[in-house]
Length: 102
Ligand SMILES: [Zn+2]
Image (cartoon, rainbow, N blue to C red; front, side, top):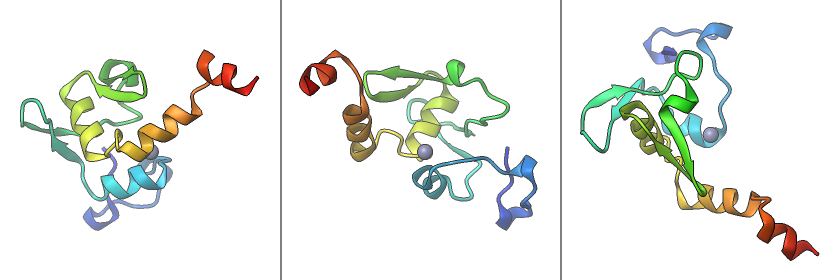
């Protein structure tokens, strides 16, 4: 897991990951979070070591955690915040959107 600066991590490339401001803000220095289903503390999703497909799935515009790691990460990073879900909905290029443009 990436080591936060306040825990001795550095600015080397192997300790950095691209993230949007929302995710970066919500992650903060956390390396782990509570799985809302089991209430067990578990490591957050590691974008270089974990498989996205193993831990997450889309349900319409909601991102769902398939595992404890996925659920804890979705909750901590507030990945289904109503504003974020609305942006996904409006960004959708499904048939309804195309129909509305013509
Ligand atoms: Zn993000």
